[in-house]
Image 1 (spheres, helix red, strand yellow):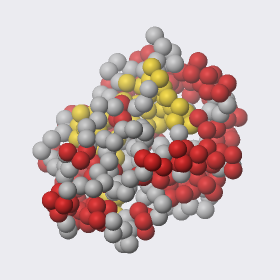
Image 2 (cartoon, rainbow, N blue to C red):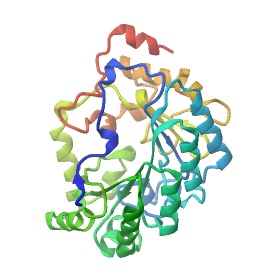
Image 3 (cartoon, helix red, strand yellow):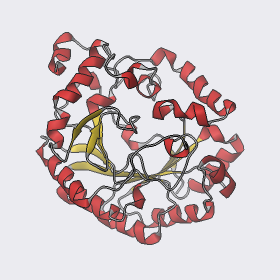
Length: 340
């Protein structure tokens, strides 16, 4: 049966955020198994040789402490994402991590993003048996040459297809998504992508790229490639918003326990806590998180230069016409609840 072409599950079945804030339980939490990646994609900080940041793997004992902390929230987390800055399948205990979250029953779903280069049959079976709910596979081309150009590595595209195929035919409860960044490829290449993967996944889509990671894409893409991003930004101008919804719905826990509130903050410029010394719930409702939220709601971002710059990540609404996460102009009584 051919897969459906549609957006990710996390972007479906959404509710109007302005009717829900402040949230007593985050919708999503990214727990980073590792900040190491085996790819060097041109649109990512891993592909920029001038970027320096700490790399490492999360200790399993720290991971257990984080998951146990999630039991303090009054509701289940909607989505626990076992990934952030690195390739999650590099972590030797990634399947055990999935299993621990599922057995703790603290989340409605557990999601992993991967480039699938390490998705061996053995690891696939471990992840499936552990109870993984969703696997998102990022495809970076449809040939070995494409991977060398976009991902910056010599990869075996045929092996990646075999890895995805095996997972799909053994996946049981798990949903499999496959995506590709459309800006690098011709319509003919995208049709080939669809013909290859539509029979070996549940959903597939062609992904737009933002100039995330604090503007690194502009430094590493060709003028023609970056022009695709700029044209999209111009088309979304009327959907711009002033308040970042992400800091009201989710945050990230890095491999060393540092908590950040922004997916773009790959260098830990805006830490809001440390789960080695605080509980996850304390950080979520704490003064540092609320200070940033209040700054966004009142338009006083001078203490947050990363937010103050022209941040495209939060100002773009991902589905034009959908205002579900637009919280500009909240009533003052709601804004006051975030006053630090």
